[in-house]
Amino acid sequence: VTVGVPKEIRAGERRVALVPKVIGKLGGRGATVVVEAGAGAGALIPDEEFTQAGATIGDPWACDVVAVVNPPTTEQIGKLRRDQVLIGFLSPLTHPDTVAQLRDAGVTAFAMESIPRISRAQGMDALSSQANVAGYKAVLAAAEHSTRFFPMLTTAAGTVKPATALVLGVGVAGLQALATAKRLGARTTGYDVRPEVADQVRSLGAQWLDLGIDAAGEGGYARELTDEERAKQQQALEDAITGFDVVITTALVPGRAAPRLVSAAAVQGMRPGSVIVDMAGEAGGNCELTEPGETVVRHDVTILSPLNLPSGMPEHASELYARNVTALLELMVTDGDLSPDLSDEVLAKSCVTREEEGS
Ligand code: NAD
Image (cartoon, rainbow, N blue to C red; front, side, top):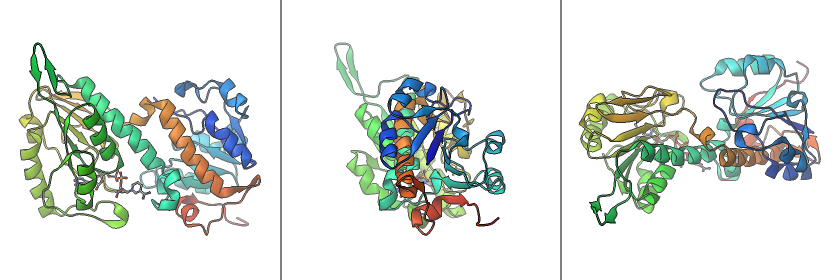
């Protein structure tokens, strides 16, 4: 079986779906990797590193399996043929048109974001691996834009108090943001609508902001708040947020617009020079004043909404993603044969289109 790795063409994308480190492992399964020339350039991986690891340089779209990071464009889907397998982030909930095109092309497609979050599939959990990168980078961006230090400093010129950082939404990205802000020396606080997260927040040396709301939903995700809960949350957060130098927001509800957590009034109440990093920009943003993809200054508060944080750390983001894809491939390739068993829960749930027998 051959596995193709195209060069990513999304604007600003520096990641690549497979890296030289995993090619030997795939070879052990009887899979040969074909990399498009320059595919690793954004992550500073030259073609020679791929070939030294056993890959060949060629046309990835002709392979049995094509592994990508971003959803394919219509033009890319046009290069696929019936019976091919596509693996990548495919945004099935927000881009049903892409899924429809893949179905019409007869491609069997597996969406990395639809892999169930069960223990057995942890090694394939690309949402988590990339959220870890994003949470880390978000804190670094906040530090970069802050007019103040993160750590407490005792110097000959006097003492500087540590920054206070609040993380709203403590899933995978939020936990990494709390850990990173703590390492930089900030005093950290976490808030989520799933009370079960409180212990994880405390274990990272952060305070838990308790607003008395329990909105734990299906499968470990949050549900949307009721109008009453939302009003309560809005008021309580407005009061709380003003005391923080840095606010990182990550709150998402699957398949919905991002919940509004930081109102314009809350931004106005923050000290000048404070920073908000809104990681939910792609889903509309958690802050009322966010402009997705932009950095704006409102009421002397800098509000950042970077759309592809993992791409900003392309080497490790690609390496982690490549391990996730490899773990998924190991489920479907045995002795060089591609035979995805769709009765396997992991493959069944992540498969968004499949070529029907005889169609
Ligand atoms: P996510 O990116 O979907 O959402 C981020 C966070 O926002 C979540 O913690 C959510 O509760 C929170 N949120 C939603 N609405 C909110 C609101 N109104 N106010 C405040 N916070 C709000 O989450 P994620 O990082 O993908 O993690 C989701 C779940 O998956 C978690 O329970 C996590 O522990 C679990 N998980 C399990 C595994 C595994 O078992 N393999 C791996 C990773 C994550």
